[in-house]
Image (tube, rainbow, N blue to C red; front, side, top):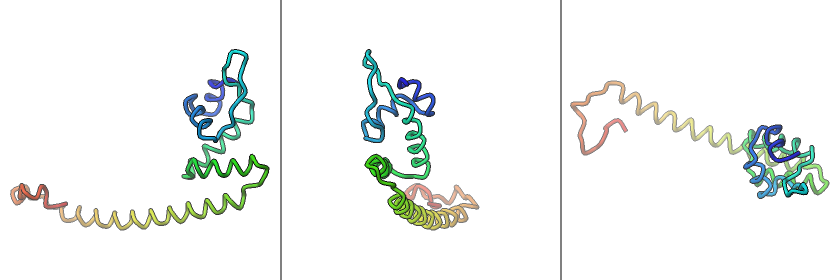
Length: 129
């Protein structure tokens, strides 16, 4: 399949395919006699894995590690479990930080509930923040 066909079938762009190839996420495809990239059908499954991994928040480096393990003949299940554990820990930390931030913004919002422009000091920009 030519790059445009793969891009359409994989729900991505030719530019993304070239980027993934450059980053080592996709193997270098064969070439047609005219020099065009000629992918085999297996690339679509790999693109689907990359998409699902990105949706889960995995980095390109983490995805590359998983693909390298699989390409080397190993089942990456334990490695993936560790990656997902770290991702969950990161998400929990982000949620905690956002909860604190939300409370701070809610306090500021409550303080700004009764806007009094006449009492604003131009030197402080805005007394509510």
